[in-house]
Length: 229
Image (cartoon, rainbow, N blue to C red; front, top):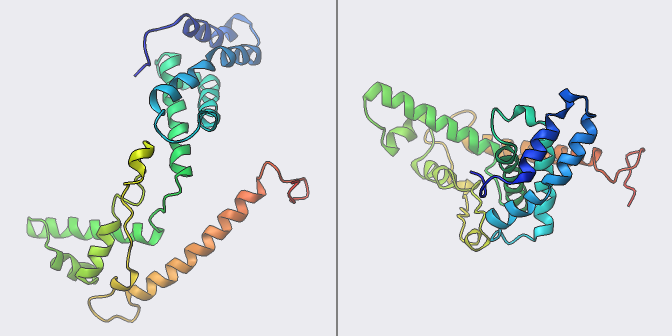
């Protein structure tokens, strides 16, 4: 939804972005459109993100990336006005920045896989019995104790939730998962508790790999791969 009525600069920007057909240099037109539309970032931050607890200067940077995306990809707007399209991209970048900076712990990947396994078992039991399964029936189907399933449920839909409002963020759910309670219901050659330990160890290695990968593209890295700081 647009933040108010249509303003003169909007028509100017749309005209600039459609000016290539009239022989105007595309880069020059985009640079001018970007300059004229930049105040939109401040308005989006003021109207939608004033209570996030993040300084305006910090939110302006991801907002600018959203505006830049809008200017250079306006042909993908699918009939939206430039302002609507730009607001959407600016808000998306700012939201992503806030949620990344809030440093909430995400569910481990193995937990996501267990959730998927529970959902598949629930769907199968529903088809077979014509009703939703009890916790005991679900535990039997996936060979995980009822206590273990309760621990998995504790993390569902909450560990990735981050409030955009700073005052509400302190009350965001932060479940503590007791891995010792996630155990097999029946003995097997490769019990669930052992698989979780192995998966958790592999994820730590994957996280390290991602950290190293990010450093390869650090803007401050020199040509030889070392930091210039």
